[in-house]
Length: 355
Length: 252
Ligand SMILES: Nc1ncnc2c1ncn2[C@@H]1O[C@H](COP(=O)(O)OP(=O)(O)OP(=O)(O)O)[C@@H](O)[C@H]1O
Ligand SMILES: [Mg+2]
Image (tube, rainbow over all chains, first blue to last red; front, top):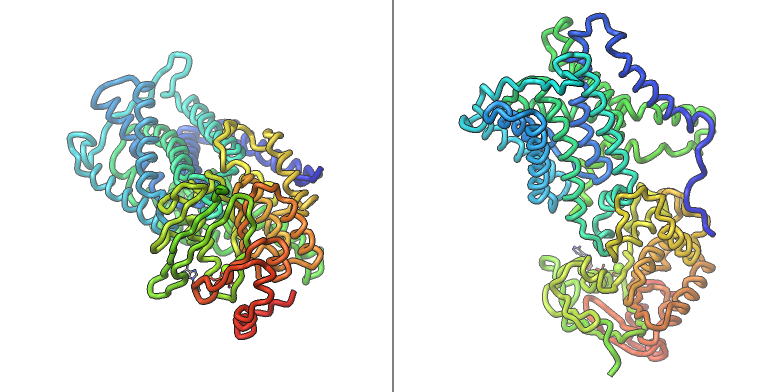
């Protein structure tokens, strides 16, 4: 019978990804003991990196596997955060119930956005999701009865579960770390399921999928709803971390932050977002000491990454491999780089294949 | 009266001011094989796209297996038993040949197991392997589409259409870019298709077009100008005129 799969990787290629993943998790677990001032590092760098990463991961999932670039992921996270805020602050409900409401609200918001946007082509999808985000922002800034307008909803108190008190900063960090890992595993699982493979068909050729009998819109909507669920989880961590929710959460600036995180991390890689988020949180915390032009510095880092590592930090490994391979082999038959990593960075914007 | 697989009735298609196809009618009985030939830009692929539902028609009706499908989507027509290939390969570029066929196998029927790891569906992978073998892609399964030759990509197109186990198979220039050996095996494959499958074939290679079909339709400049048996088409002055006047070289 015909061969179907590439032979298992051997040597470095086989263990390096595992070693790298293990090292990252090890450092993340030991993080509270590695830093000099945990009271600063755990919330400002650790927790923030993880929720930024989760929200950016939902964007990367949609881009990498469905070919959709959604700028509404922050909005979805914001809906979820507002859900928690309204339940806990306005209705004084316990956290667990509030979190459930937040998750449902955010996921539902993602589903509705998908209903509106799923039929549109690449650049229009981006514009529509951006527009929806801005509409929500201006609503949140004004709806004083629901969102308390600019002042926002506060305080969103961290719960004490008895066996786990999230007011303890180290406990909170580990709680968030576990959630981050679970979100990553869930995305990887979805991507490697038959559903995930089918999504890649939708990404590469919607016309072909229709000719095969698939309901392309249904798959796009399902994927967008799944991504909204992930973003909603990020929104819940966010609101616990900030202890409040206000329109800043869903501002254009926050949307750009997540986009920058995704691009720096690598829009082709689910795990890369956490590297991107780390870079951004470090910059936003320390750039102020170096220069008062934090945005300028972020922009510079962004451009440098795009210039030298177009597939983001996660694509650097492949780039290095490509360079080595090119050194070793004569120029004319230099092997092709893995196309998936490089292309996907530009995929969503440049390719107008979707209909 | 034999059952009709396809009935195209007075269908026209305009792209803005361009009348790409005008008042075309044809019928295809269940199990019948028809070739559509014609010069470049004659409207053959436009006809296919209208039948398959990729383009909406400008006027006219299309019936599939006795039902009017003029207003239904491409996906609905596929689920009714129509499979088509594209003239310019539309494959899942970032996936392997085997994964392309795997996805093709999932379109027609909603099967559980969407949330299982895709490698676990061994029954489906067995079918993938058989389809790859059948079109001559044995051993090429693990190759990314980008690494396949042009001819191999055409073979993959074919495998994906066959994956649907269609009642009506429409192939748009399946032999483009094939070597003589590959052409020969394509003819064999088409002849060995189960009796009940209807075939609509666009092919520039006259040898293939005439070898597998019992009827041939000639299109020119957006219109159907002739229909007949392969022998009649071979003998036709009109066809010779068009082909010699046109830009196509039909010597295979
Ligand atoms: N999507 C489209 N938009 C605008 N014009 C189109 C489109 N598709 C086809 N056409 C035009 O319609 C006419 C018929 O094209 P069609 O592709 O059907 O020809 P064909 O017979 O398949 O030719 P070939 O042998 O080159 O494949 C051509 O003039 C073509 O430019
Ligand atoms: Mg054509």
